[in-house]
Length: 163
Ligand code: CA2
Image (tube, rainbow, N blue to C red; front, side, top):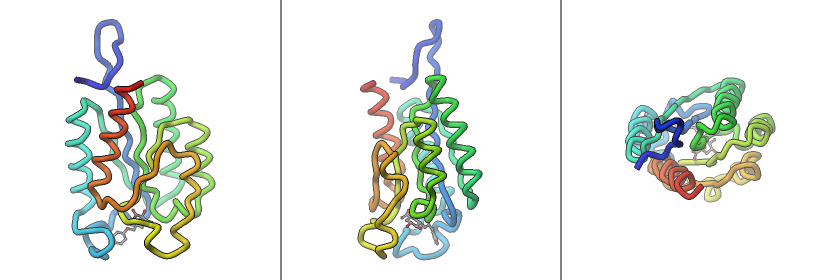
């Protein structure tokens, strides 16, 4: 069944934003023991397949720049305000551990957001144990490898269905 809302007899498909932060464009090229062998393009295909399963539209992006990530969260916030957003999956990379600006954007827009990490950050260096985003995220996932992205989209679709 399509996860959308009825507008004058037409189903309006909701959108999932999958946002990736700094250095995630390097996926599959370095540190395979930590992040696996899949590239970011592979992850994009996994997300497209997950969204297709649920009848959701996908916006998939990566940037090494904090302000660009902020702009995408604001754009998702506008869809959220219009009732057209299923949610955001955000792997903010190292900005997770530094960015009050991203936390403010998530809180300010009110988007339903899953904070995602490919690796189990709690099994790594202590500076990765603190996140500025977790307190404003709807849910936090880590350690599922790149399969976590599809699982996060499944979870957002379930939340939509339950709403
Ligand atoms: O586990 C994750 O997904 C992280 O968000 C990845 C970030 C890291 O700073 C977080 O603590 C945990 C780093 C992304 C860097 O990605 C690379 C991928 C391949 C090769 C080099 C870097």
